[in-house]
Amino acid sequence: MSFKAQVLTLYPEMFPGFLGHSMAGRALENGIWSLDKVQIRDFASDRHHSVDDTPSGGGAGMVMKPDVLAKAIDSVDNHYPRLLMSPRGRSFNQKMAHELKDGGGVTLVCGRFEGVDERVIEARNLIEVSIGDYVLSGGEGAALIILDSIVRLLPGVMGNNQSGEQESFEAGLLEYPQYTRPQIFEGRSIPEVLTSGNHQEIEKWRKHRSEEITRARRPDLYSIYEKNNRKA
Ligand code: SAH
Image 1 (cartoon, protein in one colour):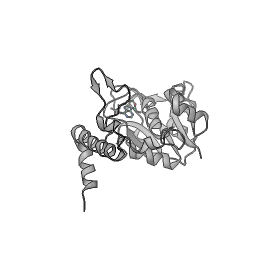
Image 2 (cartoon, rainbow, N blue to C red):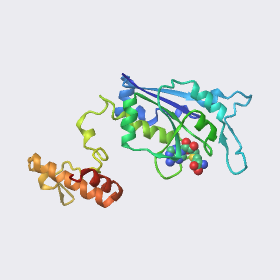
Image 3 (cartoon, rainbow, N blue to C red):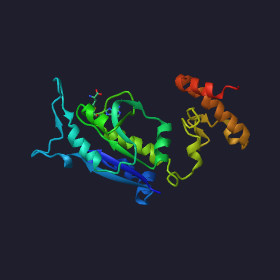
Image 4 (cartoon, protein in one colour):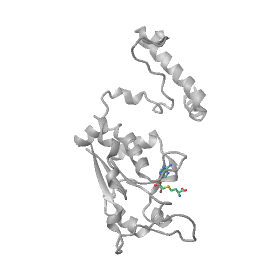
């Protein structure tokens, strides 16, 4: 069954964007996933098709109107989780990518301006999701990034299925260093073990390097990994 992505945005022409290329683009053409784009502005009812208004209580910028956004949300297939792109949201991660993939579809709501009226978040059970601690000008880039992380997990999208399982975050660790030919690059050699043909030693080396790198760069991930792998 095909994975169904529904995107609500004021800029539908930004989709599929880079997901129209390479592996994700081929998968889209082959029907492994589908993309429905909804122009939120189509649900505005006034003469000027307004989608935003000034913030209640004053302050800078504009806020997306709840009535218009609710109508847009009600127009799509509502069997799937509804995510609102938001810097206030829970941090998106690989585990969430897997869960969304397993759910068969997702609705992604892209904010603009200062964000959306709080009441539509409550009334439509929007799950606020952030792609990191920085502020973008709109949710479209975040939605594309989330979709990318899901689509590449779909069966038949990645060439070598094994490559998924060994990647960063899958085992709670960052990936080990990768090398390819030439054997010597600017005086630097490929670590000998990798060209030894001894697969057991290669696995050991990779795991060790993964642990070292994770401990040094992401102590937060490493302490979780340690806890999960501590012998009972
Ligand atoms: N005033 C808001 C920021 C609005 S940015 C605040 O201070 O929290 C405009 C839109 O960009 C948001 O509604 C959201 O959809 C999107 N966006 C910005 N940063 C994001 C992030 N880190 N993750 C996901 N979406 C983000």
